[in-house]
Amino acid sequence: MSTSDKVQGPASYFPSIEKTYGKPVAHWFALLNKVKDQKHMEQVAFLKEQHKIGHGHANALVAYHRAQNGS
Image (cartoon, rainbow, N blue to C red; front, side, top):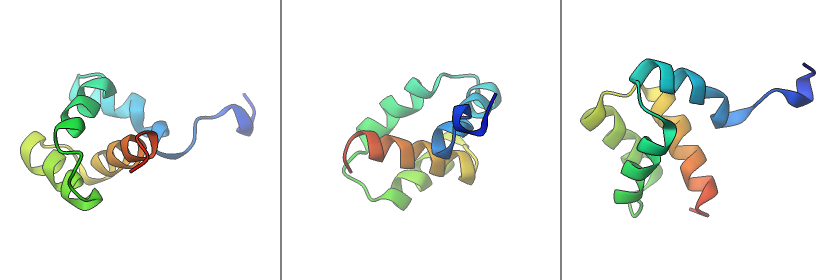
């Protein structure tokens, strides 16, 4: 696999997130849709405090979700 084939950015965390928390990333994106009007770090705090997601994983989910939704 060449460097150009490797997943980079927030999506590179997805396999670890799914393994660690036992839910597909789509689950977390659905939760983020419920708080889509909040700021980036408010969404990160929501995942950390309400769902016990680690900071790096929460930040990756929020960053990817916001990029996909033009936020």
